[in-house]
Amino acid sequence: MNRNMYSTDRIIRLILSIILVSLYFFGYISGILAIIALVVVIIFMLTSVIGFCPLYKLLGITIKKKSK
Image (cartoon, rainbow, N blue to C red; front, side, top):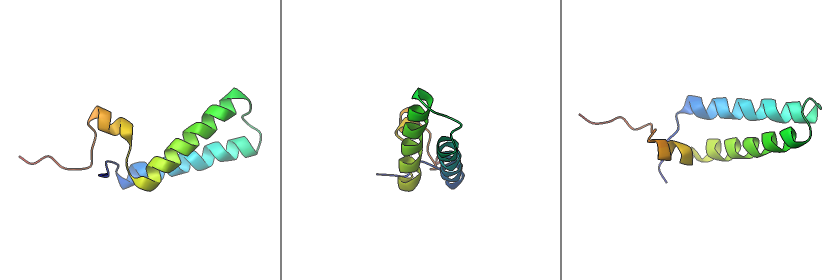
C-alpha cells in the first residue's frame, strides 16, 4: 500500500484525535456526538499510523509529484 498523506496531514490528524478524546474524557461531549467523535478518532489514528487515506485515493490526492 502506497502512502498518500503528507507528514503535516498525519500530525494534524493526531492532534485533532487528542483533542477529541480529551473533550470526551472531560465530559464536554457525550451521547451520539461522543460516539461519532470516537469513530472519527479511530479513523484518524489508523490513517495517520499507516499513512494511507482511502478518501484521498478516491479524490486523487497523493504525495507523489507528477512528472513532466
